[in-house]
Length: 201
Image (cartoon, rainbow, N blue to C red; front, side):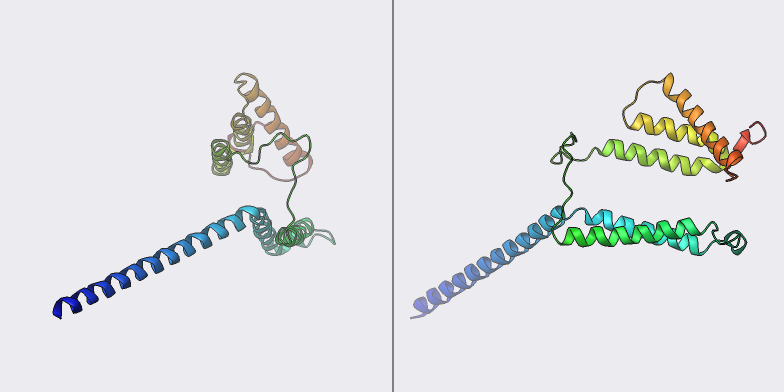
């Protein structure tokens, strides 16, 4: 009698463990399915990232425009804050419209002449090189001035995007940077940091 009860207990324990295992495997499969569906949903609507970026950029531009110095902003009906306000509002409108279009199922189509394969992974080396060049420009513009930092920016961007003309690219970058500095600082009256070249140019 005790043997029969022991075997019945062991069978019930085995059935309970089998049920627990099947339940846990079903719940794990359900979680994996949800993760897969979420990843697929985000992959199909990846342009939402552009909408979020534009929205944040619009907020930054508007915040910067609204916190301009009162002396700078009060130079007539169209002051320095006018264009940033228009651009910031435009960025917010475009961000909202783009996000609404993506959520309704809209998707950007590649142009007929575009040779970009959307199934290939991103070229992270180029992205990181460009990010490093822009970061170096932001760090160097104060101490060395715009002409030198701008030349490094233009040359670094050309290198990151694949140009390997080591004799020509630095000369073009320096000329473009000096031309930009002269046009903005001297002709348009927009002060740019000159750095060590301040007294020379």
